Amino acid sequence: MLDISESVMQLLLALIIVGPLVGAVAALLPAPPGLRGKSPEQAVLRHGVTVTGAVLVAAIVLALGFDRDHASRMQATTDISWIAALNVRIHLGIDGISLPLLVLTALLTFLCALYSYFKQGHQRLTQRAKGPSPKAFVALILVLESGTLATFAVLDLLLFFLAFEMVLIPMYFLIARWGGSEGVPGGRRAAALKFILYTLLGSVVMLLGLLLIGLHAGTFDMVALATDNGAGLSTSVQVTAVLAIGLGLAVKTPMWPLHSWLPDAHTAAPTVGSVLLAGVLLKMGTYGFVRIVLPIAPDGMRVFAPYLAALAVAGIVYGSLACLALAKEGAGGDLKRLIAYSSVGHMGFVLLGIATMTPTGVNGALFANIAHGLITGLLFFLVGALKDRYGTADLDTLAGATGAALYGRAPRLGGLLAFAAVASLGLPGLAGFWGEMLTMFAAFDPAEGLSRPAFLTFMAVAGFGTLLTAAYLLVVVRRVCMGVPPREEEPAGPRLADIQTYEVASWSPLVALTVIAGLWPAVLLGLTDPAVQKLLAGGKS
Image (cartoon, rainbow, N blue to C red; front, side, top):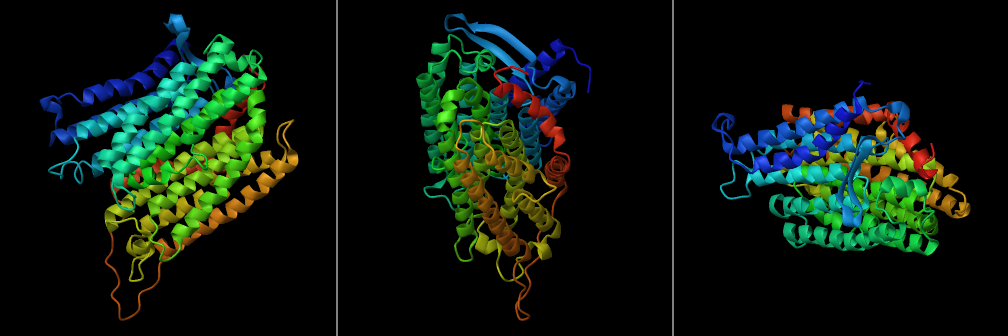
């Protein structure tokens, strides 16, 4: 741990949030002649790598300076009056809950920028005579990063809402202008429109709930509200607020049955858009449940917890069954769409952990959040690479019988896809295992006041869901990686380009962190547990 003063920590956190916005503005300006390199397109893509790299370095330094012995205390805090009439303040800070999400966001955005620089720089953006400007692409990625980082760092309800909404427009344009239309009903623009309409409607309802809490409590400060632990809010206000806020957060998570925008958005989005959508944006919804709903309105949450758990396990089973249907031979399933449906199931485990209202469950939910970001981010990178090589993500094409097996045509790519698949199904020793195990363990003994028989049923259904998850992921590995050996009279398919150097650089951190988190879960749980204990105890350590 580095010994960094509080003022420097404050500066680092402010830089992490504001830096990408400044970088987005700079990306839209003409590049100085000496920095253009081979082309202006390459220069702006290199600018994106530089800015996101600087933000990642700042996030790592912030993490190294974070006092792990007091992980429950808000650190690097800034508290400045912004709109005095509404008592809205620019209140920033991080604790053991938000820090891992902050670092994950900075890491994934940097890896996406690095991947785009090497891949899009010479394949897509520079080779398209007509197409969207790379300036806009980089600027949108940076605005998206700023909004996501702000969501995990702000401690004012209205600022949270503004940051929460800030990511919608960038993601809409990334899908609508840089996405593909294969396998998407209505095309990429329809998918983008569906994404923004769902999330905007959910956000309007969420805003009403946030205003209800702030006006009744007399403050929008999330730390003060969490410390009160709902003492200043009547049960009816809490129930209404949880319903309104929960609907908005459930859409972003996404929770079944409010998930229908996700498969189309993922299928249409470009590779980096899918990585950021799965790895970062989905975490904003579950983070809101932990940071706002659980500590601020515990009585209201207790009313809805069984229903949240029921919908969570329904999502686990539904997502797995949808994936099994897509993986079936002859179904014409899209691999990106399959992974999108798998996210519905994985986020169901996160919601189940939150619904138990126990430290074990919430810690499991936060661990599963990080694990999902690492593993599913890697999966979308890999599927993007497959689509570039084959020209499609159609499972029947990828699993063709004449030498299409990845093990024989691109062995390192096939091996990495198999690794990501077994990590996603929760193999012990990898990151995906601990979150699912802890959430089911918490469902065995939920918080006081919740029906234990009901949660035992939810635990059993979730356990069945893990079997379904293993089934569809092993089917994908068997069909895509192993394939069917060609008959002697049929020529074997040509070898594909195996993993390139820039892909190794972009994917290796995700592989390493998946293994480290799986073998040494205390690294993450040691951060989250003190903060979760304090949060659920009403601000008392």
